[in-house]
Amino acid sequence: MTQDMLHAALTGLLTGLSLIVAIGAQNAFVLRQGLKRAHVLPVVLICALSDAVLITLGVFASAQISKAFPPLLPILRWGGAAFLIYYGAKAALSAWHGGAHLEAAEGEGHSRTAAMLTALALTWLNPHVYLDTVVLLGAISARFGEARAGFAMGAASASLLFFFALGFGARFLAPIFARDLSWRVLDGGIALVMWSIAISLIAGA
Image (cartoon, rainbow, N blue to C red; front, side):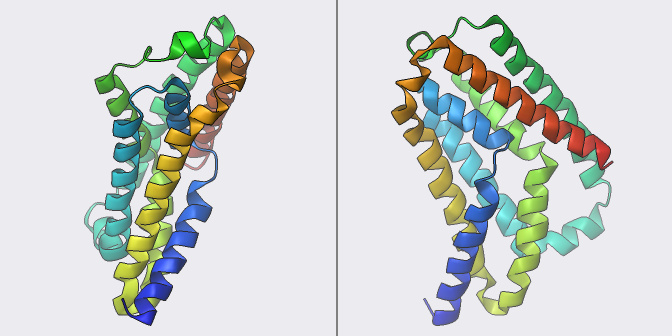
């Protein structure tokens, strides 16, 4: 790897991490699955690989995509807002009713298929993901010229590292989430995150 490629990859890694660590719909779902130890690997792989695809599109084809299909972002905005409102309502109901704790939650809740479909929806129906990966990272990568492939690899690696750390590291929080109150607080926080993102999408329409 040349020095330019190495510099681009390092910049991509740091930029990707700075964008992904913010609390969001994807992260909240991965955290919850990690705490439940339910279907963590497929969920993590879906989120990381989806980000890698979107980053690649942003780095190499963002301009062409926006010109070819201008209505894409409005469609994603409204579809994403509707899904986030629905998922936030489910989390709010869980927070209201309570009754969950770590031992009872392990292996329950979403089936593998449902968990994977939710991970896909929280990624591909969330316009913020497109703004971060396709638009922002795509714009930043342009200044690296021929070395932009290194930038893409670095940014994709950031997603992979973060989601694996979040999904499989969540189990170390198990003692905290052995109590029902902790789950209710988590679900309440997830609901607020989902609804705040949905409101910001609608307000920006």
